[in-house]
Image (cartoon, rainbow, N blue to C red; front, side):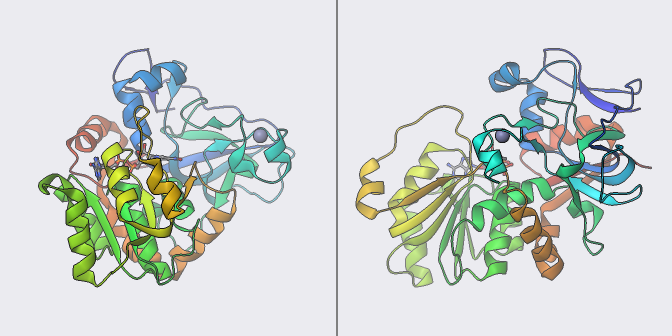
Length: 350
Ligand code: NAD
Ligand code: ZN
């Protein structure tokens, strides 16, 4: 079969056509992949940064955002049949650690990632534990289903706190930040302000529903600019909810400055290296900071699916900017590197 492979410990990827179809165990399903979507993690693996060198075994088929149909089921699998349309949870959890046993699988300390630690979805077929497959509602398009994994990151971040009627600051208008703007408006936030350093992405965030999209690189003093924006909107006190989705230290600092007392922050962005923050802001404002990793299994998936069916899909559709056959993957990675893209989908079926 065809597969996009990290063939050796060096930058780049190769599209091979001689990879064996993965075998399935008795509790797995085999998925025939239709569409995949590219994540920032795939770009890290493509460029072969320090994290990838430490984490990814080679050779490995990469990718973890996908939609397809079940092509085979293991002998002990119930509830799935050949032909079912699925995407899947990319975190494979151990099932025996304390959190797994307590039903908190998203907190498993032994998580393995599809396309990171084990063979991934940028291929014609993927083998996945049946319990990780998620049925795609008939009214959700293949395009959107192919990136329910990162949409789930956004849903998990947004729904961690009560957003209804609240004012939200999102730092980082990458695909997950943009989708978060869409979710916040869908569930009834009052104002959503989003920041980035990239105008192309800020425009996309606006089309997803952000009320104000600020290019922070054009402001002399980002905190002053945020305060001015708050005043224009009629916000007198500060943001109630912060969604940190850039991994950038300055972005987080300006968020802490502009949060209201009692503010709540979902921290999803992954900083490239440790940084200091003004802890006094956290203490004296009584701010709650929650680290977000992946999606809640499987509450996030059910909530996401129902929100998409209930109209969120119209906003999320704005995030998809490019679509290519899998053979043109190099072009796709170039677009991502240029910063002039939202989500990019690769097609595996002609
Ligand atoms: P992305 O890299 O596409 O988006 C990050 C955005 O932040 C970019 O558009 C960038 O221009 C912007 N940015 C950079 N400096 C900024 C600043 N000073 N102020 C505001 N914005 C700034 O990433 P993504 O795929 O949208 O993911 C968002 C973040 O979440 C990334 O840090 C990613 O590594 C992380 N992530 C975390 C999880 C998790 O489970 N915790 C999962 C996926 C991604
Ligand atoms: Zn576990």
